Structure formats: structure tokens, C-alpha cells
Amino acid sequence: MLRTRVITAIVLLAVLVPVTLFAPIGAFAALIGFVVVFAAWEWGRLLKLNGAGPVAYALVAGLALIFSAWLGVASKPLYQMAGIFWVLAGPYTLVRKPKLAGGAWRAFLLFAGIVVFIACWHAVVDARTHGVAFVLSLLLVVWLADIGAYFAGKALGRHKLAPSISPGKTWEGAIGGWLAVIAIGAIAAATRFYAPTVFTAFVEKLGWDRSFVALSVLVAFSVIGDLFESLLKRQAGVKDSSGLLPGHGGVLDRIDALLPVLPIALLMLG
Image 1 (cartoon, rainbow, N blue to C red):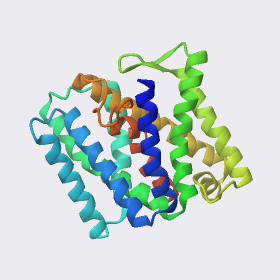
Image 2: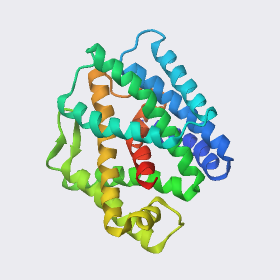
Image 3: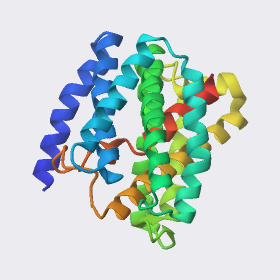
Image 4: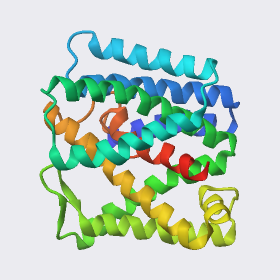
């Protein structure tokens, strides 16, 4: 299992790193588009679309993405709609845990998913236009929150964060992830390491105190995104969103925390 996981990671990095660092923005946007379409396919599967339903849903998401780019749809309204979804529907879903069997709720998630995926794509591409360091620093917020949560949870975890959704997550882990983001963010902003980054952008726009608040909000929504997908998987009765990435699960398993963080971050910086 570990060998498979490592091999998959190496292959993914061999594709993603050169495209992110060196490819024209169009090639980068196309690659992220493929990622988003596969994630949409998994979203359709988790929402229990039958037969060719997940494929059709992915095609709709892909076409919507292409037309949004072709028509020059403004990014900010998409970020606002995605932000409203995560601010309202995210916590509501985690607290109330509405069943997917409910036709209206599933229909809402299918519609909202298209907006969420398109907003995520626009956010990544917009971030890339600010520079490689900027987009990588934005991804780093989620990676640091995840890594910090893992190690803090392993060492100190006692109190379950959401035992009925994701038994392995703890409050201590979440706090550890938050501290990791705040610490690295403060160092990056103070030293202006590889500026412009999301850390320097927050400080320049919001000042130090509100930048800490903004980063804290992003960490909170990275947790919400992770738990949201975990709940969808639990209700769908599956361990992973798919088997597309051997050893890692599916695409959604890798980007679930990014879905809310990316558009909310760009919205705060807009």
C-alpha cells in the first residue's frame, strides 16, 4: 500500500510540478480543468447518480467551466456564490446531516456542485496569474493545516472534533494545524519570502491583525471542506471518493479542503 501511494505521488508530482512552474497559463488552466472534471464525476457518484449519471454530470461541469471561461464570466460573483454555499450549507450539512435520500437536498447539492467546481477552477487560475509563488502559498495554507493537524493529533489528540463524521480528527489536531499556518504565514509575511504570496497579500491589504483572522478563517473552512466530503462518503457508504489515484483514493479526497479555501481566499483579497 505504501509503495503504491508513493508511486502515485511521484507520478502526480511529475505532471503537476512542471506544468505549475513552467507551462503557460493556458496549459495550467487546462490541467486544472481536467482535475475539476474528475472531481465532479466523483461528486456525482457520492450523490448516488445512477448509470451514466456521474459521467453526464462531469460533462456538464466541464462544459460549464469552458463556457464560463469563453464568455469571460466575472470571477467575483462565482466566488461569492461558492462562499455563500460554504458559509451556510457547509456548517448546516455537518450539524443537521440531511440524508441524500431527500430529493430536494440532493438536487441542491448537484446544482451547487457545479458552482463550487467552476469557482474553484477560476480561483486556481486567477491565483496562478499572480505568480507561481502565490498559487503555491495558497495551496500551502491547506497543506500546512493538514500536516499540522496530523502530527498534533497524533501527539496530543484527545477530544474528537466530529466523531460521527470523521473519528480520527481531534480538536487538538485542528488547533495544531491552525498554529502551523499562523506561524509559517507570519514568517513568510515578515521576511517577504518569494513575495508576492497569499501571506504578503493579506498583510498588505488587511494589516497584520486582520491577516491572522483571515488565515484562521481559511483554516476553519479547510476543515469544513474535509468534513463535508467525509460526510458525503459516509452517507454513500464508501471509504474513498473513487479509486482514480491508487493509494490515495480519489481526486476529491485530495482537493476537498481546497474547494472552500480557494474561492474564499480570492474573495477576501478581491
